Length: 271
Ligand SMILES: [Mg+2]
Image 1 (cartoon, helix red, strand yellow):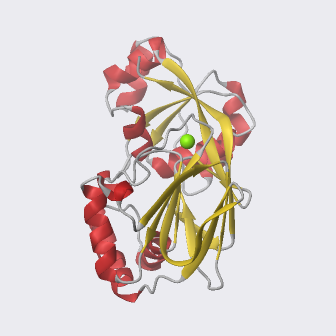
Image 2 (cartoon, rainbow, N blue to C red):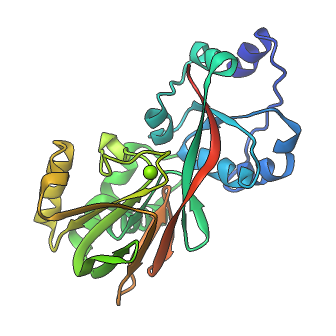
């Protein structure tokens, strides 16, 4: 195990817990993290989010060593899967305090998607076996693209209705990055005490493809078919059962009440 050898060579005294499945990382963090100075999380975004949820309510700092498919959190923070950088981080790293989001009493670290992308994840989970790659998403996205009907929703941001009974899909984010390098909530900062909202007005597949292209080109925020806002509290409702996800896990259907939890997580980043 290279990570253990690297840490021991630098006179750290690591205790290594290997997670056994979903839920185990969060359980371990809740039970045992208080015994250590720092929790170093080696994994993908799912593992990181789970451990951070387990640590919530404590002031235990975390560091990360990315080893997942997307590593959105690590990319946003400039963390590489590199042992030399890790040692520099542990010895001389910058300490930052970042916000978390909350939706219907569930906390999230990165982002939440309402509608289309939650539907893709539900499709994916129907036949998922073990670890996923980008290719695993192809059929779920393809099926959702042709089946999804973009049911209407209403979005209220800090008490103001910004989208009223309109068809589309939306994202609420704490970070600027989304999967495959897209920057959907491109103005989002993880420490500004606000959540960023990006609502794509959309009634059919071809409009969605255009939105995707504009997002790749990073011109989507100037498009009149996009509503972009920042808020502390967001309420999303619909008369139809629209699914939503947080940090890559489908969690239920609307209604959803989002809020920001300022300065919730302590993270040590590369110097
Ligand atoms: Mg923010």
